[in-house]
Image (cartoon, rainbow, N blue to C red; front, side, top):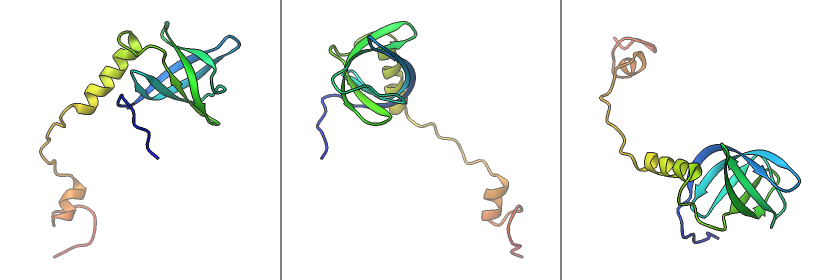
Length: 124
């Protein structure tokens, strides 16, 4: 069953520290939206209150679901500024950037596949 989300989740790779009253854990945000994040590499119990620290910038959240090595954190207020929001916008822009066209560069492998020199059997 697919959950209908109001915000698009964007794949990212952002190392963070997740802090609770009792502990600080290192993790990595692997997908992010304005409303929440999926963190891998650490876990907390469902409904735990926590904060995500990215270079001294704090975002508060609540653990909505947790598995052995990952968890989903929902933010009480949508991201609208700060370093985490900036990283989200950079990832979103990179996802939507047009792919530059590069003319085909002939390599030994590509030359061999079209009958030029290189590796493989002789054709002549």
